[in-house]
Amino acid sequence: MPEEEVVEIKFRLYDGSDMGPFRYSPASTIAMLKERIVAEWPKDKKIAPKGANDIKLINAGKILENNKIVGQCRVHCGDLPEAVITMHVVVQPSVTKVKTGITICPHASDFI
Image (cartoon, rainbow, N blue to C red; front, side, top):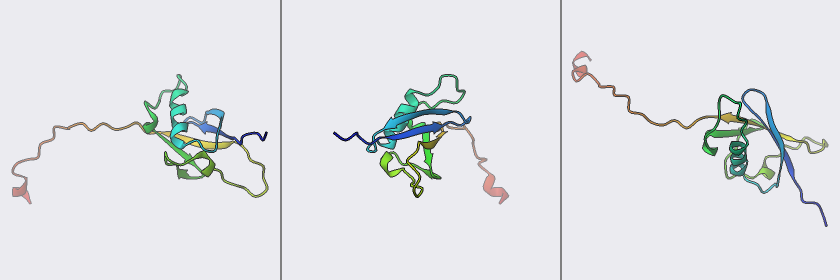
């Protein structure tokens, strides 16, 4: 029985530290990777994602979309053997919209 193909991925965090490597099926989605990153985020980091939507994954200079699968993320380098893929993790917390309370001068048009 043939061994199931797996892809090894490590995640490079904002401070240069790594999570992993972890083993994934080539059919795993980027959304699944983000969920695992949130679940296993190191507790000692000052910046932490609250959810998968707070994370951007970058591989080979491209931001990966949630519906993309891991098997599509491999970059083949000639005859080099398959190696661990390093994906960069960018934490970008969701911004909540807050009313600023700024009022515009009712007579502003008088100065134009």
